Image (cartoon, rainbow, N blue to C red):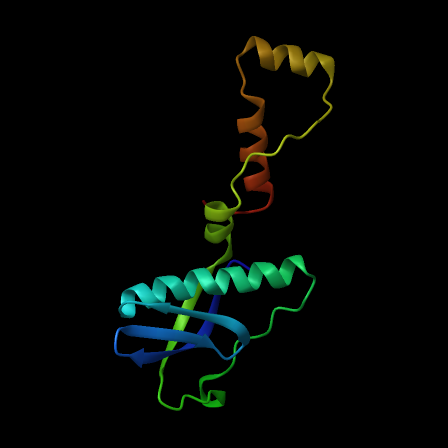
Length: 131
């Protein structure tokens, strides 16, 4: 689940737009103009998805365009990149304890290897995460 696409309904107001998501009724936001409202929609969608994941709730499939009740709004597809969102909002370093053979530790230290960097690079490769 890297990139997700969800429909949003942008509603015009005198001073900008407010945005709703048919698939996430709890997710509402607003912006001063269309660009700002879109940026806020991406952030709000990210918060809604990560909250649902943390609570163990299902992430709904995106509604099809013909299923939308647009009323007086403007339908917009919002692109959400989960990896980008997590890097932006969950990049705090966490300490991990690991065990390696003594000979490997000595060789790596003699060569000035940064263990944290090697582990991060290995995990990114193993998880097939695009930077």
